[in-house]
Image 1 (cartoon, rainbow, N blue to C red):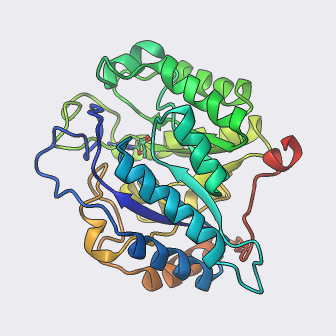
Image 2 (image 1 turned 180 degrees about the horizontal axis):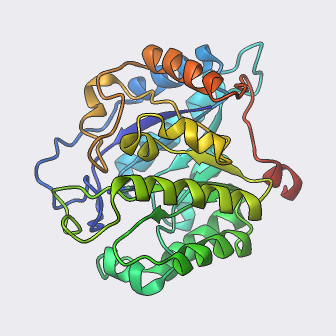
Length: 311
Ligand code: 5AD
């Protein structure tokens, strides 16, 4: 379990698929305070979630980077408990940043980083991003993160307009070639306030099935990585996350963001758990995971076996 905190929905990027893209004026932009983030962290520690993910829109402004660095440093010291003397594991998911920023946040105590490549087909990548974002610069970021010492996660969206099965097979080969430690992927879900809305995509059951098969195929190729069963699966199928576990995923990211900001962090429509709080999400997920026949690991960072061997 990784408790997920959505620290800010402000974003400098204009990705053509994403609901919080900077030109969407219908989003009420927020940034959590340091205290809010620390409260979420303490709650994670309380529930025994051994690690947490700090996710946000892509912001490189000093104020935000300072906030994240301070939050990471304080979480490290303030979540130490008898059951978890090293404190929570901390994963960051705050987009493309400079080497200096990645290094600073690593030195502050973050040890895992998620940066999805979104698709490894360069033409499709160019179709869903503005020209100022390139496939090459994302790959360069993944390499920097690894050089610095992070455990590195990436992933793709499944069922993008024009995406082929061959593209998805290439995505899996990319994960393998990059020696990735963690994977997060889910179905593409068109958002009405984005340019990709209205582009042809497979129907919902077909996209869910494709996402599940992609998890299974990735698991068969990369045996020892962590694979998340993502919220996007549940957005399209009420039991999508349980199905993800059955198809080979082994990580769940319970929502820890304060309830009053959840609706403002909608990368895609239909995000579940908008009206719930962390406590409700905890008991709901516990039930769902047990129902899927799996056991929950608590009070540990839960590094992938791949990362343990590699580092
Ligand atoms: N549908 C599905 N996933 C999306 N993401 C962003 N927008 C969408 C969407 N419309 C995913 C991207 C990003 C991650 C945080 O959320 O893959 O990397």
